[in-house]
Image (tube, rainbow, N blue to C red):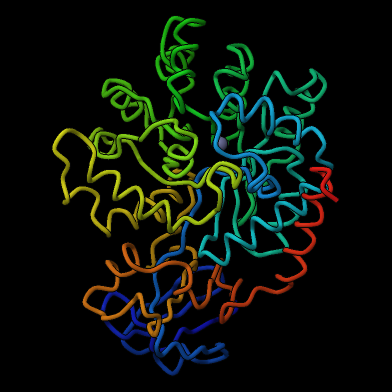
Length: 421
Ligand SMILES: [Zn+2]
């Protein structure tokens, strides 16, 4: 088994040596023994601090190709007049190129996992495997955008490709209650339950979605999905902006998780998720960025800071104590990993060896009264020196292999699709 030692790294206020054995953290000590050093690669981490990396609980990776293509319009107009027509032109190769740009951006901003709801999943899976991070890749269902043959192919794929890889897993992803009907939603949930997959969908993102759902099915999305037997402990809902306390209670009772995407919700004018109410109800809350065309980046640090700030102005009077720095960090790291069943996001023995090394010379991490506070409220991705996933460096000293070519190729590809070149 490979051994990697992070020597003299600042961890929770103390200088420590951290031993990574294979894919997992195996020891965190003031100093390791001679035996631990046998056959180990040693990295001197003086001047660096270790923190958990980010886990992006909801995105559409290849939509980086649409970054800046259509902005400043409401969700439905944006989807039907811009996004879906652009996406109809995307080839498998385009999706590979867009996913590569997304993974590069995520690594550089400290993210080692994403949950992806998109098309042509094989391309995204290939990119994730090559670039060394983790992902839960969706087998996506949207009846308005798929032929019945494609639907059957999707279900077959889920049966045939039961992946047991540490880094790349599949999930069943019916897009939303407004694009997938009762029969197909129930079939998706049945397959997810039987095959042990996470079931991920957009949930109560806009008031229009809730209103239309009430009109069509006589209840809110949460009420209807619960009535259909879909809310379970393998259920992960994205957005969860427009929920009543009763609906939050239902989600908590069923063990369902909520992934909040506050930047996207603000930008599309969809609303503000009720962070405190969700946390108080006992729902497992994580964070995601949503796609780069509605955010417009994949930087989880921004979500982490924003979710804390929004929580502080929730309700009539506001509360500065709401979602403190440590809690915001937990939502963006361990909580999101746990929502997807991944034992990671915690720097401790037995967890997957995923981590960020922060550069203590970065001006926003100084003065060093409180590293966690500086990291959450003051710093940004420029403080990230290196990124480790599954016991291996995926970014070392701010460099990712091939990054210049990835950016160049994505730009040329997107402009061609948009007819600008
Ligand atoms: Zn989304």
